[in-house]
Length: 266
Image (tube, rainbow, N blue to C red; front, top):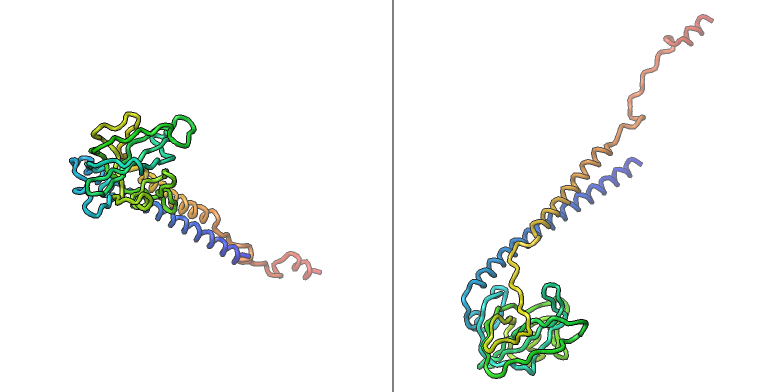
């Protein structure tokens, strides 16, 4: 029985130690995410401060808009192709549901960039916007912020279906629209001629460290709690010596017992 109790105690102790190790690793992972976020914030600050430039000078001939280009101000001149406009459903700004309207802007060389023209708040429970502002005709110059293609993991929300999509993904849009598109998109900051006043503008980036540091502290605290609890219960449940393990008390000799003296007198 005692051996079985020892096995159970050792198993429980190992489980607590494993839990503490997992908590420490999760805390380190949060610190790693914090460092990544700080590095990304530096890129964002640098891009926000950079002067506007033609998109080709920023992205290069590959046409890939990556994380290093996020929030960089680009200038593109071309003509909107309204026939290949996509409505983005289930979008939100400040917890306000609505739609975004993405229209390809075709440059003189035939290469196009997806332009997110703005946000249309949902008025009630409609599944599609009640009114989509028409695109300007003729040549348009757009100044806006670059963003990489949105990805939804295993979902296919970036593939347009019947003129709608849930994500903006350059390669996925290109397959359906049959266009030479940049891998990424841009949001409008300024447009000539002006963008329709029905569109709401997009908020800027959140440049902060996020909750990662405090999450890391929580995981480290959980690890300390687990180890502290193990030490406490180890001390509280320290095995006591069993009665049979104690040395037997010496018994008096027969000659020293009162009964023995009485027997001799008789």
